Image: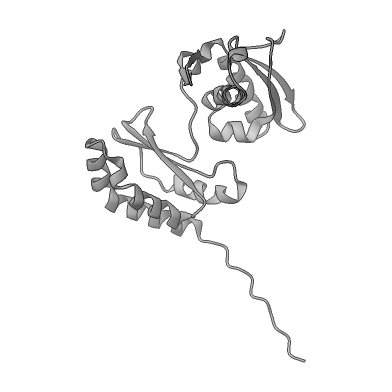
Length: 213
């Protein structure tokens, strides 16, 4: 009898893939900086897409205004745990932030979401008016929330959904929101025990520390 042994799929070398990304990034950087300086990012978008896809084809990326640098490169797993090893290795191998570039493995939180105003169709809504009711489930390490804004009744269903999740993402950032939010609902009236976004951020960050995040 002849036995056939099934070869185990080799684990990807995340560190090597990350190193190759940053090698290609160094080559691309002068062209990218020139295109951004000319306000023509589309000139290099295909090159950036290929560079990120070589790390993993399911990763997402954006080039945004940085918090401490002029620009921020965000390469995100969008909450997919299977992709986290790629973004973890990518960020670990990233160069030190400079005056021009900083790097994030998830969309970061807005420094002060209460100072943000968003446009939804004809509506301009201040996030400073958002109130959140939070129910902490310490055993599961998540927070169930209800989100209220005094102008929600003016919005259609799609805009209501956006105004429910957008304040949470802006307050927590992509990774913390993905890890620590449980059930998310829209509140038609302000809950009695609601809190503001900055207090809500502190609560979720405390839970994350307790949960070992």
